[in-house]
Length: 294
Image 1 (cartoon, rainbow, N blue to C red):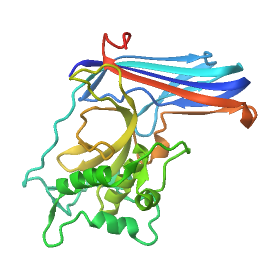
Image 2: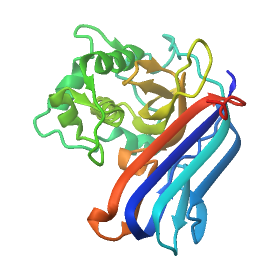
Image 3: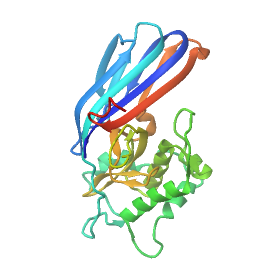
Image 4: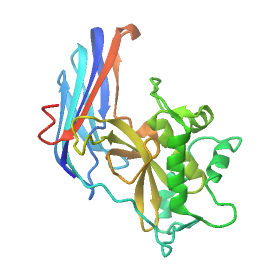
């Protein structure tokens, strides 16, 4: 896998100078054995009065910016160069404890997984639970990986993707009943369906990059997908928007129990509602050395 440079620019525009409240930035790739961060930079205009970095409750890197001047534009430019080692699609063997569903989590791991197993969204009539059970074989134990893979591909094939400009993420029942949603909506639907089955799942925010003729030449977008936890396999990526199993074409930035805990960039401004004009987002993911030419 080549070295990749991610360029992410978000600019807020106003029709008059406004003051800015606190902004939280989650754009720094989440490092691990499969993702090395070689260089990272965050530039903000106007320059914040203070900028501090913290690790949140999940270990994600979060920059917190506060401001003391007014402006009619607020720009965030995050640049990162990473070395990506996409994991091969993990195949459970019959000797693995989680090969068949249902399975039990280790007693030592279960206390740390409870928050990812318990459903977070109401399912008063059991519609989501019933949909989740359609992935189980009727007459025999179901291979666990079959459940995960089939759910990933059915969401991709059976729902209509649409960009939503409304703030936040849809309730999973709204996504299921409307048959449409964004990548964040798809991810939350799959997470909550897996939780209905007692499978630990969490939300992932990051970037999607797709090669063109074998090269990464500047395409890319913010994206969201799912991680499911299986004994002996650990956290495995599933992208129901694109039907991807494993971390191919995906760069993690943040993991969370709920999508509201992994918003790439959010903050406030002090001024009238009609002062806001627009927000422009530009994202490029290219092979290192090519990012400046695309």
